[in-house]
Image 1 (cartoon, one colour):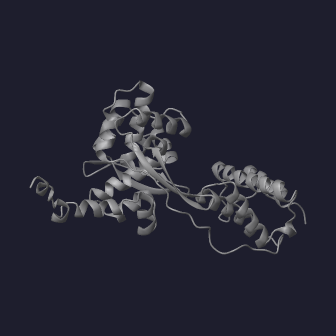
Image 2 (cartoon, helix red, strand yellow; image 1 turned 180 degrees about the vertical axis):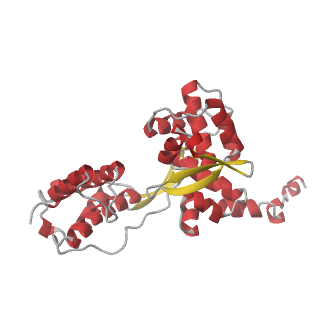
Image 3 (cartoon, one colour; image 1 turned 90 degrees about the vertical axis):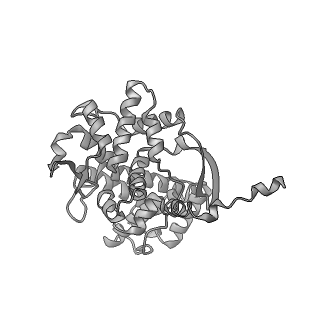
Length: 320
């Protein structure tokens, strides 16, 4: 019946050529195919270390279990392991549907966990904005500030910045941006905040001029590292199947994803309806929205912080 990995490679090659398409007829994106290839490299590494080869007829529940243990032994993070297992699950379901293998996999995706993820407060954003920076870093930071007030994914943000005026609308004297977002190119309309308009005015129509997401993220880390915003934070995740906690620098966790989470968090804490924010972020349920921004506990803490219970002070009795 042939080699499982060779068959995966052939299908991915055909995806790149546009021969193999999604069920709706759309092409697979370069990013999706790159992720698939990364997952198959992990499967190939597993097969080389444990079996030598993987025939179609050898794909079964036991193989998936062995692959899971292989990933655990690599001391990988739980979310990385779940991603690898889901990557294998994709091919198992596909080949089962094509009657190439008898095993069809287990239902449902592998569970992901909530790890430490950060959002910056308005005060922290202001501290970053007030930094004296060289032109290159200033431009990166200004884009980041805009992203924190627009809530866009980094890919959508870069596309938007290449031609801002084409996406700008005015209604009742107020400026909005109409942007196609995400894989399904869903249209969202976002109010133009004061900070965003100020930055756009400073740079003109074309703000983003061809640097990569990698450069964007690396530069953001450098900016935060030398700012007063830098601090130590507790980082939680499951690694190698064991819950772990590390103390890391805030800068190490800062990336383009931080901006979108910052938008959702600060918008919610400012009193904007989560349902309105979800229209921009693209989340389909309140549960997924709160899991993403992870600020419901902060909201509760702020609400109860003014309660008289937290103002009880009997330290004066020490002097008596």
